[in-house]
Length: 335
Ligand code: ATP
Ligand code: MG
Image (cartoon, rainbow, N blue to C red; front, side, top):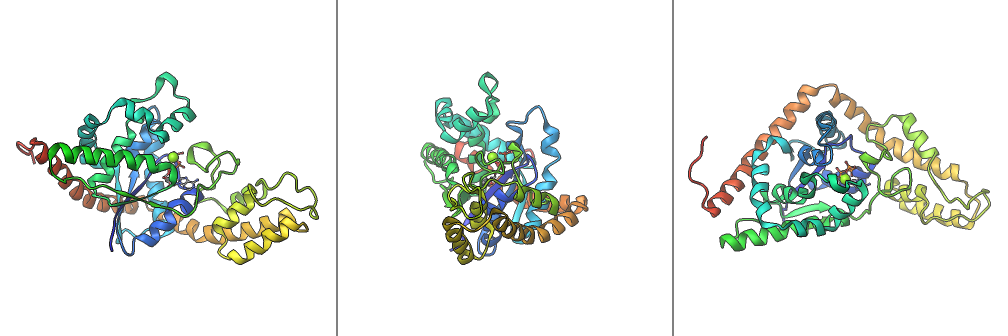
């Protein structure tokens, strides 16, 4: 069975290892059987960077280069740019009337992010309503499945509420409800060990990181603070090196063996760090090379993005047209 899939990434910085395990790896697999659209979410990036549009514009092509470098194939996946698709902004305007401010303020994901970012009274209206703009993105493409982490489930609930409300009001099943495709890996923690790896927190290993940067990042990773001598028994839980080995080392039997050895005592931190570094270097080396090639040809990156966006434009305009017809607001077109 073929799904219609939508995912995206905010253009707030180059993508990192968290994106790789949390979604990019899965997208490369999904593109073979499913109808997949991947969106560079520059508008969503602006919702908490309104004063710094240059940060967003400077990262759009970086994100496209990251997609291509990990193996997202523009012949199989529609890669598109959010701000170039007017239907998404228009759908957002219609959907905003179907959601209360109280409901938006209760959205647990947004609530957490607002608290974390410390907006206080200066919370941008655009940030509060970004779940509605996500609902527009998802429904514009008729997505049946949205790959997400667990913390994003409230977003899909909010989308489905809008879908049901809209369909009920117009009395026709115009919009499609979506389901999550939960990734089997949790959030990858950041290098500071303080919550998830994130572009905005400066705790990430970007996919284009140089070999030196990878080496330094691994060597300075937290292990078990109680594991002072090699012979001491060590803790594996909460030990970043093992968390990363679980995520990136393909030899699960070897990792299990090393965990047992570490727990017994007699296995040094440097040994496990070397293994992790080998895994990361061999993963990132080809990605880095391909990424550098793509970044060197901005014209080609722009053409690829434009091509995908053109396809996305057709699909999203069709949805907008259906929504306007269902609302009785399709008096004429200026095209
Ligand atoms: P920002 O800090 O600007 O919000 P970010 O690093 O959180 O950036 P997003 O663009 O918000 O990245 O994330 C896009 C998607 O990437 C998320 O929905 C999630 O699926 C995945 N993702 C991001 N960070 C991680 C992580 N540390 N571990 C697993 N998945 C992640
Ligand atoms: Mg984020």
